[in-house]
Image (cartoon, rainbow, N blue to C red; front, side, top):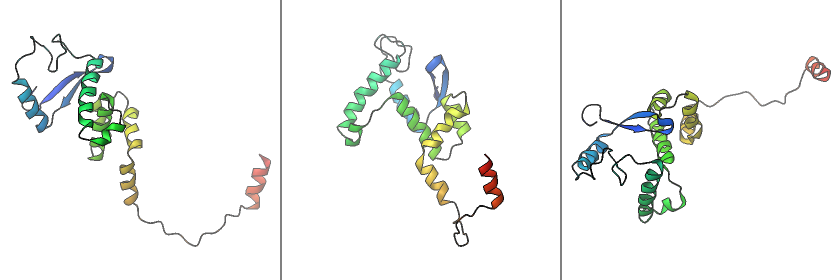
Amino acid sequence: MLGRGAHVQCVGKGRKERSTPLTKVAQQALRRWLKEPGKRGATALFPNMHGGRLSADGVQALLNKYVAKARGHCPSLRSKRVSPHVLRHSAAMELLQAGVDCSVIALWLGHEAMETTLTYLHAHLELKESALAKLKPYERAKAERFRPSDRLLEFLNAL
């Protein structure tokens, strides 16, 4: 749907329907796409050769085709595996890097459990580095060697 609150409906894994908001650039591209002549009475936005929805394999095949073409212009793609899941992960990482809250990303990706989304936090090194940069240096007294008390040693020996 284009216009206010522009979004696309996608059917994902487990036949879950997801609404994904569109950027202004994506909206413009879709408006141009929709002006293209119809594809044999297609009912899907990006139809397969029979006019129906693309299968997961169909999406992967199209992605492979355009990644192969892009590799000619972007040599760094030659050593990378690109899949719809990688694109989804990249989008989530971009949202995270832009400061979007994990709960919003979880809703966006259709994650049922917040723990699934939190894996993106663990993977994001730049986020970790920026968190470390916010810390104040720890000031401590002269480093001393730890010397356990007799009481602690007796306890440990009793174990």
